[in-house]
Image 1: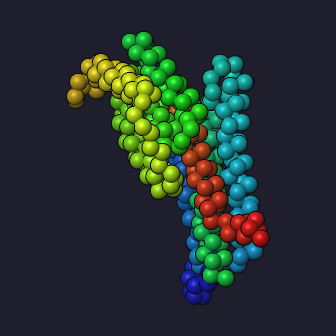
Image 2: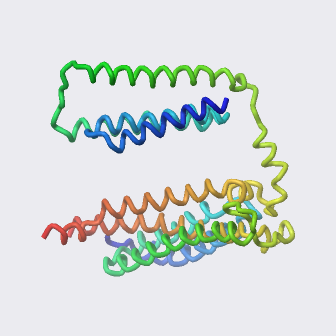
Image 3: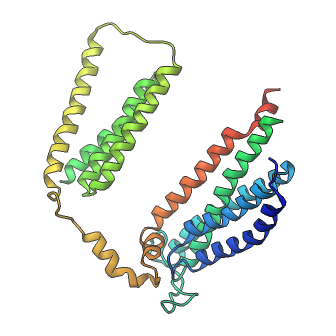
Length: 146
Length: 178
């Protein structure tokens, strides 16, 4: 896939880190403000997609990135399951997904037990999933046209 | 009330066992439909009509798609002559249909009437939300009360990605065919 003009490339290089940071903010503040893992993950993935659309695709590099994202996605879903199992074991209440970390003060950034950790894991999962699907489609299109 | 649930669960188990051991795909798919529609009535029994609506739509669409696929891919039509086994199969179908219909009729009577919500769960969610320690009520419900649901959603995304990668991988397929 070919990239776009110099103006689009430069502007996207300035905008993409801001979008990425905004996604991180939405994920980390999921338990305080509207948003959370699902919305923030899609915002973070859109930063990747913007970069690929603007700069064009270099196939070997993209394939390498695809492998990394696949690993990230599988690791995220495994982490979610492990967190659920830890809730079952540590809390002693025999409840899947039992909140076993101290809840702290409502409204602070580090509070609400393991809800922020769950948010981060789901954000990783969603970001990796959306980016993987996009990269797979780009790679497929380029391989067909080769 | 519980006896109806047990009858439904036994019918569902019978249907799934038959679909595992059926000789042709069409009867396997149709007997698998017993599980789906049994689940609809079980949801009604457990006072969850919204889940029952979703399940009945999903089940009908899936069944239609699967039967269409089987009709278009299998070429052999097995035509059976009328015999004793036909009467037996017909009787089994009638028994299943009658059980489904009777229990469905009983269950629709126990649901709360139109416009009268049954809000025990939502009241419990809103009143217990401060226990999660989350300032955002939605996140508190999604990641604490209904975290199991969220695990399912994440798994759906994971499965979708695996499906896309499996279908779109050209290079691996070519290597295998050479």
